[in-house]
Length: 107
Image 1 (cartoon, one colour):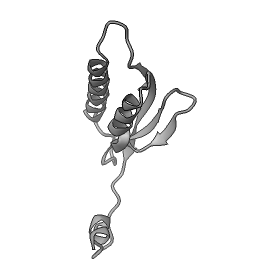
Image 2 (cartoon, one colour):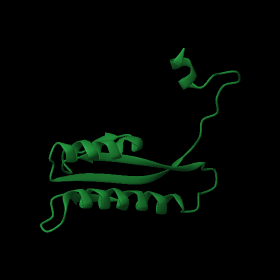
Image 3 (tube, rainbow, N blue to C red):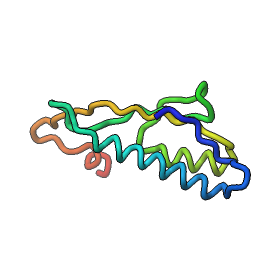
Image 4 (cartoon, rainbow, N blue to C red):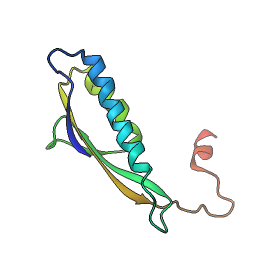
């Protein structure tokens, strides 16, 4: 998905348009994750770029997209560009006896 979403549409409530764009993004991701996985692939991962326009789009982590959209809308942005490209993901095996990185940060 490579698309510029407009948030200011004449005759439509901005908050409703914002929620509709988030719904469209979630719907796209859900549809992509239903595609059968090729052999040797563990899950579908996404390459993401986000910005106020296509030229200024930067690489971002998939989990931060919604918060970036909310921040842009709060600052009064009129539109944003989002690029989501599905790619095969492979899970890395942990070393024997290694703790998850979250546990080490909590101590």
